[in-house]
Image (tube, rainbow, N blue to C red; front, side, top):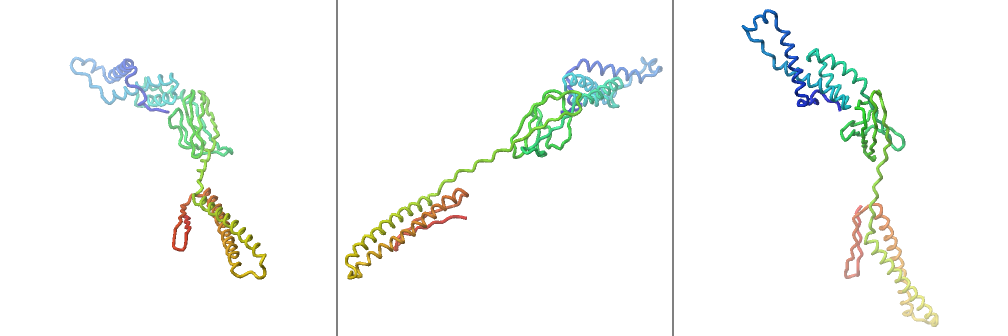
Length: 298
């Protein structure tokens, strides 16, 4: 916020600056003339004015005016910078006295500000970037104060992992140190994407249902045939026992397939909610029957 001499406008106060510079040049010129040179003024020309020296005087006059203008506008940092410039030894004595006085007065009027940011648990944060009125103010918070112009300011605090926060503060002139403290809230964690249950899980569940139905059908069929066989015991032929054994075997196999299918289906559904994996279910037909192939990436 502080500015050096370049903040003074060259175009503003042109007439007044020209008058000041002209007077300063005249004083300097008269001071260089001796009585003998005055007496011989008609015989010899006055010494030329140094262009570089005149430029310095013009810059000093600009800073002299800018000090008063910036101070009246409440831009105390810029006003003090201009006052320090026109108080330097290269500026004319007539300006240096006022500029030195103003710079001292401004130094005791400029307030300073300490910024503080804390997390939700009250911990102090240092990796915080602060903007003041839309312009960079601090890249990190180190607990040190910084001078600021008096008046109303809007501060924005930004820290990685936290929600940015903005605060307004009226900084009072003449107060040595003021404090602004904010508490930053953590950014909400992003919601986990909803996983889709893989098609393989549904397919295996279907296989389990069909196998369970097969178990029930062949189990009941075997029981029915066994009850009919009881009427001819013990003279029943061996051929009558074979269909019963076959039904019971198919029922047992169907029950096993059903249990395995349901278990795999449930495992796939739960695993898909934890982490996405490449899954593939393929049914292949062969001479010996159908083959159910399942592949999953880990």
